Amino acid sequence: MEYKQLGKSDLKISPIGYGCMSLHPGQEDFFSLIDKALDYGINYFDTADLYDKGGNEQELGKAFKRRRDKVIIASKAGNQWRSDGSGWDWNPRKDYLLKCAEESLRRLNTDYIDLFMLHGGTIQDDILESISAFEQLLKEGKIRYYGLSSIRPNVIRVHKEYGKVVSLMTQYSLLDRRPEETTLDLMKENNIGVLVRGSVASGLLVDKPAKAYLGHTPEEVANAAEVVKSVSTRERTPAQTAIQYVLHHPAVTSAVVGMRTEKQLDEAVGAISAPQLSADEITYLQTHIPAMKYESHR
Image 1 (cartoon, rainbow, N blue to C red):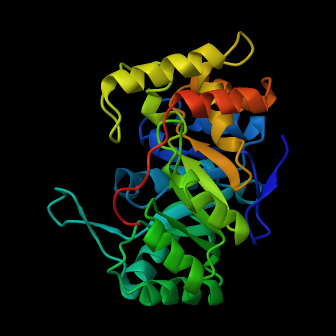
Image 2 (image 1 turned 180 degrees about the vertical axis):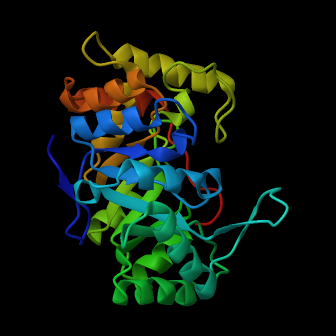
């Protein structure tokens, strides 16, 4: 597997990353899936303190014990669970982000986090205060790099302007081509690596029953799935077609895929070696699946 450099960092990551939100503590094959991913050459593992209220990080800490140097761990912070467990609220304050980092380090059983991301954000935030937390963590050696996880162009632009983000995690798929409007090109121009989540649109482009999605009607979603299927072949499944589509953009470093089963893991990794989409096939997909634009947060 060939590795790609993540933006201005010296992190070289696999083109397929593991979206660990799909794994849960107590899952019987949690550790065997991680082992197989490592055997395949996946080295980027993405988690957050929000997932399973920290349980996801804790299990990954166990999985990577004695092989920490083999993996690149990314985590995120900024969403604070309510005391009654009923949900979470947004908290991008410096003191809270610093606390989150300490707790993530403890759960992950590591001295440093390779990539630490702000897990969201609004244009009303004191963004410079949030950035100061990440800068302090950098100076203390507790994180190697920091990035942003967001779908909001206005927030992305501000962080690009004032921070030292090396990466952007954002949602991108054939059913959500909004990043193609401006975000992806902006990231490419500024050498900020893009980590894609949602490449198969929660399975709607593959095998899930059609339903309304981000302004697309159920009929449009069903049509999109048929278009993806029509471009796929015996050697390249619809899931692999969808993953290859997001990877084709030069701004994208890795497709971070949630893989709950061994079959899903095999299929996602297989997207790398499957016959690649041709320029004509990419044009066909773009022509037959309409792109949308951001209606807010522009």
